[in-house]
Image (cartoon, rainbow, N blue to C red; front, side):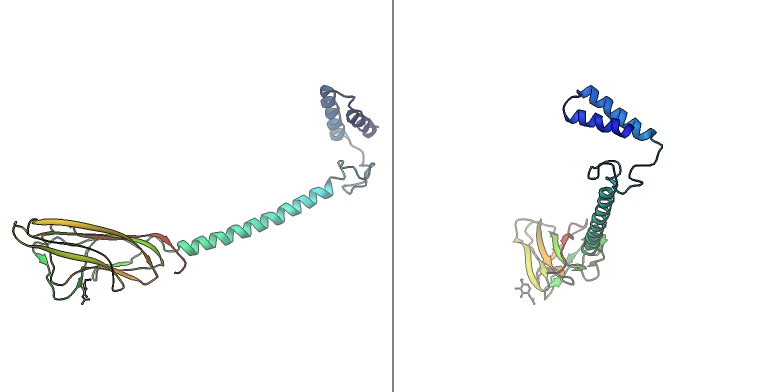
Length: 239
Ligand SMILES: *[C@@H]1O[C@H](CO)[C@@H](O)[C@H](O)[C@H]1NC(C)=O
């Protein structure tokens, strides 16, 4: 009987009577026997009714395999659920979160100001407005999503001749509160520029803009040197 031959070979191997080459030959023999076996299985099916009842043989391995398959399937379903939950969280967090704008003042020959009150500067030449947070008519950025934002502005002025007073002050505002400012007040320079970059935490709907202070002016910007830009560094679900 082939099964008995195989079992005998295995016992011999277990006793250390076979060398490696002989063991390989024995496995080959086992494999060939299994493949060429045409009779009915001693267990009558995949149900552990084997000649050696508790041995994990060709028959007995069926049940553990089914269990493993079941466990793997359940684990995969769990992983899939976890993954789709994570996916929807990411989508929720990043929904509409490509937010960035760049705007410059339109070229002008004269001056903006002076005015009798602080006036928000409308940077009307918009080269980027992802997420449509920036309103060029008002010069106001309204946060479409809560998060950490970066804002920059440059205030440039040229009064033309030396001896004329360079008198500029611009300030970055968040909902009416001063966040950053830059200024120049002298008669030595006829032109100058200054910049500010700040990181601000904004709630959705927060408004950020640059003001020109009352009594101050920005002059001679012919090439759009006065710019205002901002972008979302990262979103938060709510502050
Ligand atoms: C204009 O801004 C200046 C400087 O931040 C501030 O002192 C002043 O109160 C502001 N004026 C008004 C009317 O808000």
